[in-house]
Picture 1 (cartoon, each protein chain N blue to C red):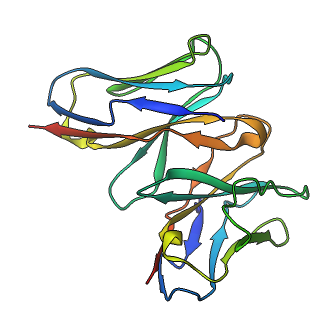
Picture 2: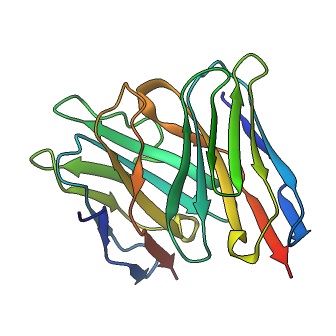
Length: 115
Length: 110
């Protein structure tokens, strides 16, 4: 079946602009996660959603970052007033459920470059 | 704060040789994952280790978990070039969030 998909695959933006990154999880997966991968910081957790529960936002690096998940499916990660240090690959993952040890399946990522 | 440390970070080995990658973590957890990442690609799940003493094998790779020592190992047997990639361990903590190690960049030379 279809895996996790993300769009766009690449995004180049100017410093100070807002960007939106999209994630389509695997159908039926109730848990959705955002991570980012950068040279300096490695792989970092950002936020996760589980069903209708309040999201765990504890990994978001600043209040310029926000995410929503509509209808328990598609998620959008928004970065406002982008800075050069936001340049990274943003990875989305989904799993059957959180609180149990279900595998997280990762999407191909969105490579964000802030110039 | 949970820390996950991999050793070594860079590994160059010859085809046919054996080697082990180590993953140490600093907090109690009995859930550990290994992922593979090829250049420019996303993360591919290799192993899910869910309890102390768990051992899993797939082809030339074998992973184990010792929760008392807070240590997981990824053993490579008779390496082949196709195994060249970066390998990450990740520890699952509250809410199923994963904390990743720094990654081990493996190069297998003919």
